[in-house]
Image (tube, rainbow, N blue to C red; front, side):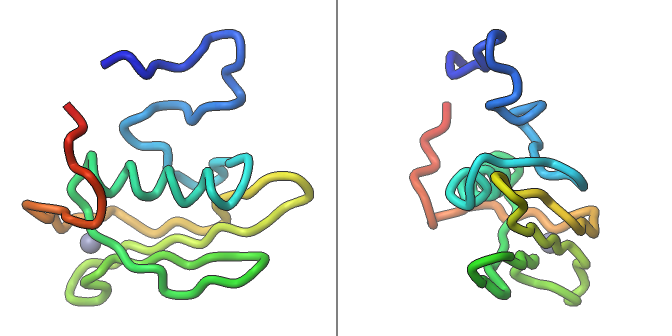
Amino acid sequence: MEAQADPEFPEDVPPTMENSLFLGAMFDSKDALRHAVKMYSIRQHRNYTVFKSKVTFVDYRCKWYNNPCKWRMRARERDYYWEIMRYVGPHTCVTPTLTQDNPKMD
Ligand SMILES: [Zn+2]
């Protein structure tokens, strides 16, 4: 694995690449957030849907929300970054295969 964080710019990357989604996590942009969610999903084999997406916030939910998984999170636009304002976990259901993106991660 070579795409490691550049230690000179620790604020530019999530705390860990394995799970960058947690309450208070910050992202440079909505695209960065979207990317983080996608990476989390692929690496952890968790599926999700965008429940609501607006200019200033976005809601994610487990694909099987309430059935029985309770995973959901909301990120909101701040002055110059995006922050996860609400995180309800854990995301317990595992999806064996994800096809929404290229899964060739290793
Ligand atoms: Zn789930």
